[in-house]
Image (cartoon, rainbow, N blue to C red; front, side, top):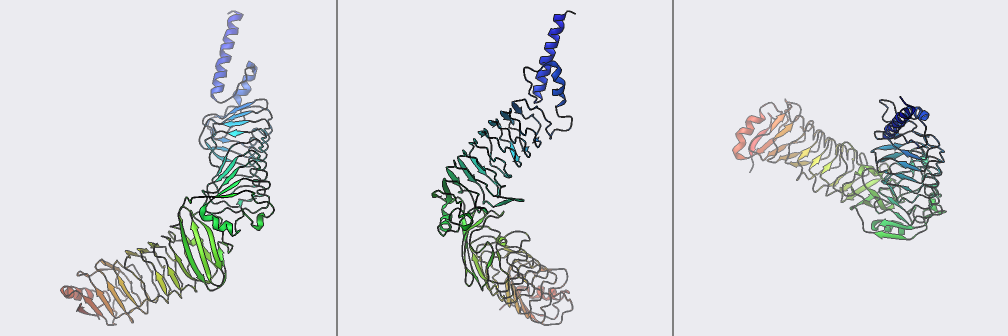
Length: 529
């Protein structure tokens, strides 16, 4: 074989190896000699390790391309590589960039195809002074400490879609033109404070809070040092700003460095509702008495709160869930709440507690809600007025031990949980749905009950321990209801007398029914007059 033929074979092999390496994401410089290829081959991720990126380039390379199938860029990969100019992330989904990955890459100018970034860790791009754009960068969540600190050429408009951020995340990002906040912002991120969060963002022309649920709060005077620009807020927040309650205005926490810019209001994007409340003294725990709530994960914020410790106040709720808020997020000080009214349609879900055990509560007006969660008003022993015009269902024990509650409107009720009115002060009932186990046990003031035509089942011990007070029951249904689990009164051999009223056509049926071992054998049956 001639020397010329051998050289041709080597060149062909070299070209083939180069193509194969580049297909694996390895950048092969045109000047690389054949004896340099083994080192490049050894840097390819090994089998099964498809989520951890090995170091694919040396400090002399100028470009970095994320290989297909790799989603995690390891910490410190390119720290201090002054020769790195471009990074291509190939629009790979769920890319995670860990701490200090590109820190100090002072000649990095751009990151392309970055739409798949889901996480950027601390110091990831710190000191990338020539980084101008991150192509396709979507809303940031979360935002780590100093992640873009000293990226002085960065021109990306920034969308923040998280409740919090780390210290100095955008410090000295002189050219970022705008910041848009998608949710209610808070002042901390894990163990990080926001100190210097936007310090030196002097090129920002506007700060857009129109998508937030409430006015953000910031804990440090240096968060907006040197910042100017238009401040855009929903119209509903204007009142709070005028009262200087906002850290975007004259709040003491930012007295040395508030945003210096005009406030511009836009139309509200979300619904709102109002809570009126009175107190017997004390303070409101959350939100604080100065009126501005930071955020909560129920999808609403409190954008205003006129509060007086001796009389009460009015809260304005705003956000996607403002009309269906979890009011359990609003906590009142011990026993001081006296009354509450709200246009909301729910008070929470599941087992969340609303205002359980508030001894001072006397009146509740929640006309639009359809469900009361378990335990909501349990132990409110001075509650006398409870208006729930559209209420349909009640969870377990939600009015248990409300001993002063003598009347409740069951007109629209279609479901009652166990123990819902145990030991309450109800004096009479008119109900048109099935009655759950021990629903009215120990209601020792109860004297009469009327069951509507929709009552088909009364569960065991529904009226346990009320045999000495209840004296009459009226059944509007011609067919007697099923008693599930024994006796209405728990004791089958109850001897306390009473009267059962029923349709005239059903007297015989109810007479047979009441003698069937359900605790009513001592009762008489009469037709409804």
